[in-house]
Amino acid sequence: MTVYADHLSAEAQQFNWLLSQFAANTPEVIDAIAVSSDGLLIAMSHKLDRAGADRLAAITSALMSLAQGAGRVYDLGSPNKVIIDLDRGYLLVSAISAGSTLGVLATRSANLGNVAYEMVVFANRAGEVISPQLIEELKVSVGF
Image (cartoon, rainbow, N blue to C red; front, side, top):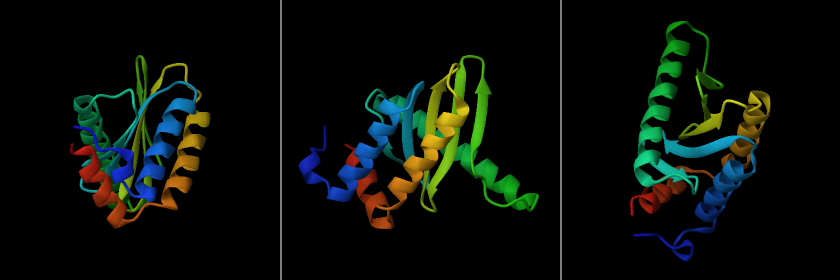
């Protein structure tokens, strides 16, 4: 079942649009998702199916949790970005706000500086609309 855009608040529609635009317009980005601080999917790019988005959400949440733990244990502060360098691509994770995280899959030919920059631009734009109430609305909207 799909939740139609007219059932979402303007802020939820804007957040989903920002994520879709990020994924579609950033060169070499394959897919992108956003997860809440409790690890639940709140938004996904249009190319991902729900099962794939849920897997990526779990991985994204786990990586951010590990990075936060390492920062605390070694007194190095909060993570800015986690980059996993794989044979055929990259997985990048960064905070959007205190309550949400962005996970991005990119091809091996991606310019990591450009992808990282666009992730910051997305986080700044999305951070203007995201709130605990919006995160709850987005969780429900992808639950269908």
